[in-house]
Amino acid sequence: MVQSQSAGTETGLIEQAQHGDRNAFGELVRRHYQGVVLVVTRMCGDTGLAEDAAQEAFMRAWVNLPSFQPRGSLRNWLYRIAINAALDVLRRKPEETFEDEEASRMPDQTAGPETALIEKEQVAMLHQAVKSLPDAARAVLVLREYGGLSYREISGALDVPIGTVMSRLNYARSRLREVLTNEMETMESDHA
Amino acid sequence: MHEEMRTLLNAYLDGELQGRRLQEMQTHLATCDACQKELRELRLVSEQLKADTALEAPSADHFVSQLTLRLPRRPQLDRPPKSISLAWWLVPAGLLMAWVFIQTVYTLTDVVTAANVTGLLGNASRWLGGGQESAWLSAATTLFGGQILAQPTVSLLNSVSVTVAGLFNGFLWQAGIVLVYWIWLSLWWLRHNPRPGKIRNAM
Image (cartoon, each protein chain N blue to C red):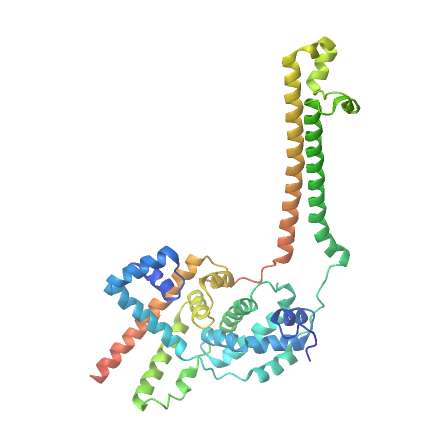
């Protein structure tokens, strides 16, 4: 059990984890698990690889936690590590083909079957397009769209100027917009 | 559409524009159909991306239990001895005290000198040992004798020299303290802000 009057606060948990308290670290992982998994999944484009990346990210976080300054944002720090871990996992397994989890996802049953299928195809296409983005542009897009980081936070996390964040985000979204527009046009012509 | 405008549209979409730039963008959007269309499409992309955030990932509890088993042993956090930690606070405190001391000495000296010059101290100023002499006046007195002190111009020049020397001394002391403080501040900042690894293979 985490024992301290500051156990509930993130700063307290960080301090305890920095001094080797695994339970405190576990609580921190629980708090940031969802966000980190979302980031690595969208970076890797595959749930299996993402799980490896998430494990690796939290292991690195554990090892490097003593050098973390509680004044900074743990979430941003973890996302930074998660992006690196995801890129490393992808690099180690370049020959593997991604089994797109979108393809195996059940469509939304509340919508009509055709609408659900179209939505599913669009989302799958978009996620495929995200995977095809260059690493640096993908990292910025993922941190913005899934991590919810501001431009300044992304700039700090990736150690690039804000102008670079803006241009990479513009590039990524323009690419995705093209994909989405083409997909919608194709669908319209198919249904015509 | 110009890339710069696209970049600004993205920033507008993300709520990153403020002040004058935000107003300019709102004004422009009110009249530009092309930018409105672009913004709609960008918003659609963003919404589509965020639409599906439910992931088939293991539960957090399961993940944590697996992770905890794999966590490597980590050497205990190297905490500096208490005396060293204390030194980080003593240095600026000592510098501040030194600065206050020097300021006080110079201020008191100025007050006493001014009081002496205006005759407020009267006979009590004898203990000061008379007026101060600059180095060049001492040399001149040795060469030409004591009568040179009777010249008002020489006396004025001597006063100016003494004042300038005092100011210069004061400046040197304070500059020295500021320099040491900056060095300390840099060391403190470096010690407290170790950078985690950079994102590798950034574009």
